[in-house]
Amino acid sequence: MTIQKRVALLVLGYVEDAPGGAVQVWYSAQREVLRIQNGRLVGAVGLTIEWHGVRLPELPSWSDLARINGEYGWVRVRDVMPSYRYGVRDHLSLRRVEAPARTELQGVDPAALTWFEEHAQSADIAAGSRHADSLPVARYAVDARGAVASVVYGEQCLSTDLCFAWQRWPAEPAGIRESR
Image 1 (cartoon, rainbow, N blue to C red):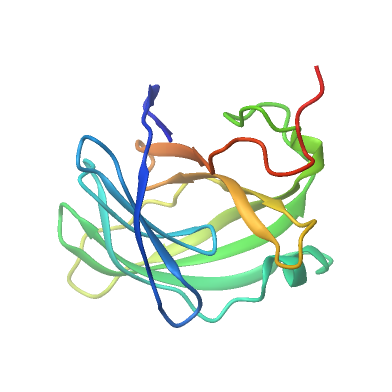
Image 2 (image 1 turned 180 degrees about the vertical axis):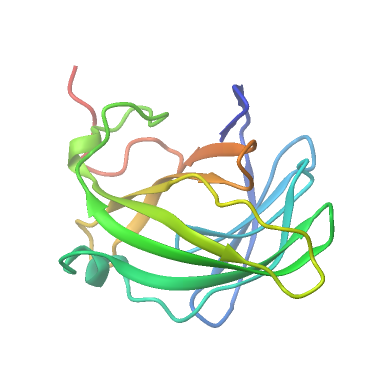
């Protein structure tokens, strides 16, 4: 994981069964915890911004999303700390894109992966809470060669000021080594 120019190795603590797919719980040496479900962030604690109680709708598989022409719209609901912002509803739009020119991806040819960008079109918040800022673009790189497509790299922001990139390790999923 790369966050604010700091590189951290996270360890998979455990995997929880959950509706919508397994949730991987990752820990850093600084006690940061990320919860990831099908490549999407569903929880973050131990950072200056935290996401709790992230609720995702039932989403199509990454393989199905890759076959969609145009954008796929959906809504994520989350609680944000500090400031006690509950029920933040992010209206998101996901679409397949070409491999980006610059990423934090290491040891893997970006062109060998299927890339997606997710734009926050708007964010609504529950009554009585302060305003919500629209989040920067998130990106996902999917290895779609196996029986089940899986996210091997992602870029996500918890706020406009706190963004990170993560990558599955080892950096070399079978057969997609970067040529030098």
